Image (tube, rainbow, N blue to C red; front, side, top):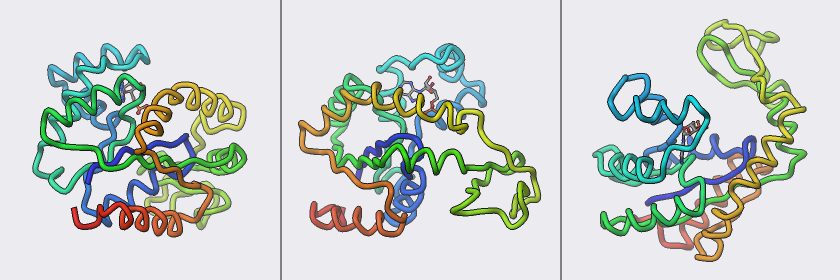
Length: 220
Ligand code: AMP
């Protein structure tokens, strides 16, 4: 089963990806994470990727698509993948379709986890992250036992600069603008299913599972 996961920051996409990955033994393929690993490893392709990433530019479609398709051919992706962070544009969605077809694979479903600006602002502005181990907390929904101290490793918790309320609105606007074509592309093809990210994560998972069942994806 191959899934594309879309959604604005703070809608609960990351949490759902983790749940789906474990439930269906899928590979969670975040292009941003994959590229950062290549850069860190200092590989030839990593050097090329860094040229774009360091400037904050998108990596050219051909490079991204080849890397994603290559990664999908590895043994740990046998049961399928959750694509996160790719495709980002309508053009990337088209090249992904073509490349999947050429390699005998297909996209099964696009899950669009969306929610209101109000929920996003509440979630992101309350998010706190451990400086040492990266564990994520929330001041209301998942507070640490001791204020600003990580329950896991005792590290100090901090707030990401772009999680401050003033920047959240802008991030949302950028997201909507940049994914408009992509969402239209998948909606027109009948692939896109929209979910309310404001639901509890367990309820959202139940709704997603019901959809998979309806689409006959559970035995794939
Ligand atoms: P992210 O962590 O998703 O924000 O990605 C970090 C960087 O990786 C981006 O700023 C881009 O340079 C590159 N990148 C990740 N995904 C893509 C993609 N689908 N298309 C082009 N560039 C990407």
